[in-house]
Length: 179
Image (cartoon, rainbow, N blue to C red):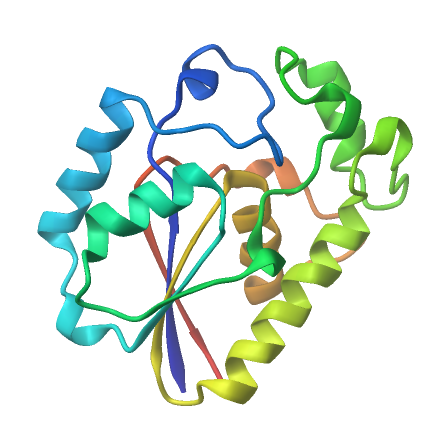
């Protein structure tokens, strides 16, 4: 049995402005740095065997604050944020977002990564961790929408799941166990 700790990066200016970030490479703001510093006080690094981190600036900065050089970090493109295509940098509009999280609709218009593709990418990443790091404690530092895909892969979902029912917060630690 492996343990997964999953953390969303600290706050960015685009989070505050409620803009879709996706793959856009945004840095943490002052509050995001403080959030990561607060979490670092609660994180027991002796329990973590390895960390996987998205290569985007906001997750790298969070990783540096949380871990320093005390835990090996592997930067992995598999765990970057879900791509929001033409909508990146635009205000979050729930009329726009709701269809993007509809499993049956599986919309990929406007260059958005479809929900099924994002869920599949999350499943492949979890399978990789299970295979390569059995019985280890793994920290994953990623992004809101991708963490949502990880979460539902770990707890289970079907075509009627409300994917908007789980919204990972910045610099909050989520724990899971996997076989």
